[in-house]
Image 1 (cartoon, rainbow, N blue to C red):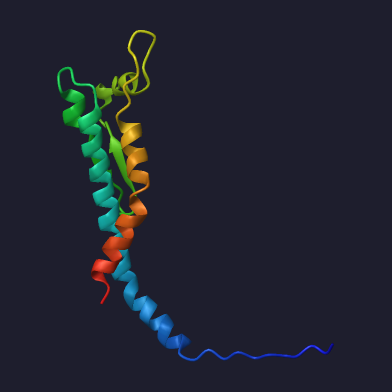
Image 2 (cartoon, one colour; image 1 turned 135 degrees about the horizontal axis):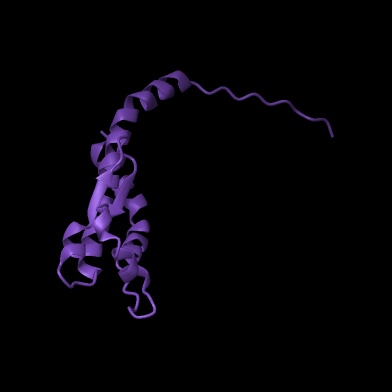
Length: 124
């Protein structure tokens, strides 16, 4: 059987490339908002779940957004809050009462939807 050569021509590829380049700032801004909202949700869930003694761990869990806006750290940044790990993972005498880990896991499934929602909100 003889092989046939086929040729496909795509028209408008340059226009598509230009349009995608125009949308890049909009998509980037939407992704940054979604990361911020997601990190805030993790912080709030952690605050609700953390063991409360003096209230220090509940009050000091914080969000730090990286300079590019696409990464966030949630947790305790003060070196005096080292004991948060003891409560999170437990010791021989203190049973584990994880708060940060479960909050991260709960939010992990929601991040993609947050990004999609933010992008759709901004697209014309």
